[in-house]
Image 1 (cartoon, rainbow, N blue to C red):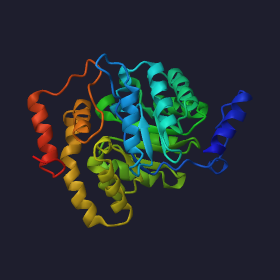
Image 2 (cartoon, rainbow, N blue to C red):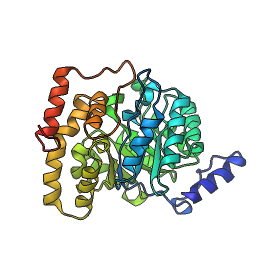
Image 3 (cartoon, rainbow, N blue to C red):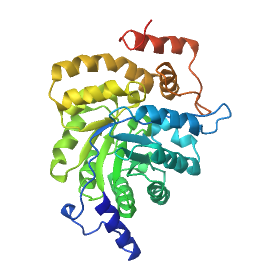
Image 4 (spheres, rainbow, N blue to C red):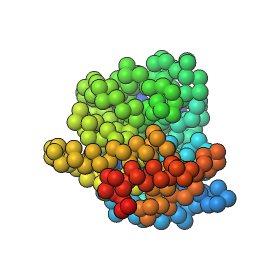
Length: 326
């Protein structure tokens, strides 16, 4: 990682894109293997970022064997934060986090120019790498050519490593496999977070990028074991905000080849994971955090709290799998 920053800074001063013409052997890749919670952003009742409660959560997460934290991912409600708030949250997290844990900061914006600028601000705030979501507003024109150009320009300009982020449930499009394969050859693009849940696609990406030392992270705890079984090396899992120790345990069982034990644990995580992601989303994640001793609190408008019916169903998903008492 330090070699990456050194090369990048020297090249930027000479007004040359830092990565063009460099082989992968020139730059040591950052190893992103492991489990990351995409942390929630606590708000006060006036919808300001609540840095005290954020810090309280970080103290608890420091005791869980996460590889690091994703800050300003989808579960951090980053589309609802100002650019200044996004950067400040990353800065506060980096200051509070133990030195051995990575900060993977969401820096994606709709334009390439804005993403480059945000990535640099995240780097300046202390991010170890940036997570760059697929631009999607003009999704009809976001073919492989456009996306390869976008991510290449971002990676050329970034002083920290780049992780691609494909989240079709939010963006309405998958980052095409052919684009991922080509982008994996870029020395400053170190991996992919794939939240689509298509295991055959994840397996194909792992297979086609093996020679590039390119890491694939599962984008959800619901298919974490399956992703590990085809070569993924970790996960960015919303459920880890709530059941972090258990998600890390599942990862360790997979890495150790203890598949029977992993399967039983995976079964018990599927329903609560679905509830706090695809089914009820961020409001459910924040509510579950409250049940497990974290600060989740309110979402920023227009996201609304769960209805009483949804709240009851959410609790069932956790109690029926043994994570909460009835």
